Image (cartoon, rainbow, N blue to C red):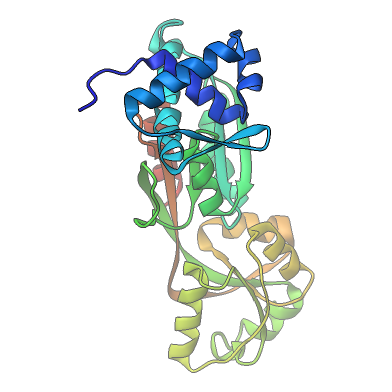
Length: 299
């Protein structure tokens, strides 16, 4: 059984795994390549397994090396968080906060959630990154993001350590430009039969709920496009390509910003909102404060 590990050796391995070669890591570590190579060999001997295999002029991680790198990523990220707390009182720490935002979320609602983070004196730089939920969660797993906002709960099949907080939900409704509003609002929902709609991605919770609702009513529609980006979907609706679903919670903002009108509510169809924060040994009050504010804003 392994009872002791030289963490300097583990740190050298971690840097080499990130740089791809010993020579590149030696410039960061200010050590000779021979020293690094020797100490990684000592670590491999201690572990009883190879961490690298040579690939051309560089190094490639073995399967065990990949597993070790994942643990090292977590260990040194947590160590960095701890070191940040030594710079002053915990309540006075300033930091960069990187937030991943799913493309499907209404940006007007997200801006309400983020407002306290912008005004928070402890945050010196707020960075927002748009993307698809799984990609954003993968970035959070590798410590490139501190928080992820999305519309689906955590998939238990993903090998990800994270806290999933449900912020709230909003019933969905169809919106359209003046032409579609005049044509469809009076006889809604039967008026939707054989009419063009723009929907989120196939298989998304919103699309599935709408398909089920239409099927229950015996209505057929023409899907002119599946669009991941909520802003693009609204822009297409504004241009008259078809009607589109959006949360009633942000009805006023949608009508004002995109020159469209509310047509009718979609029964039993909701968009849910979730925030994901990393599972860390050091819990930050910024996250808990954000979650409380977002939950109040999402209803």
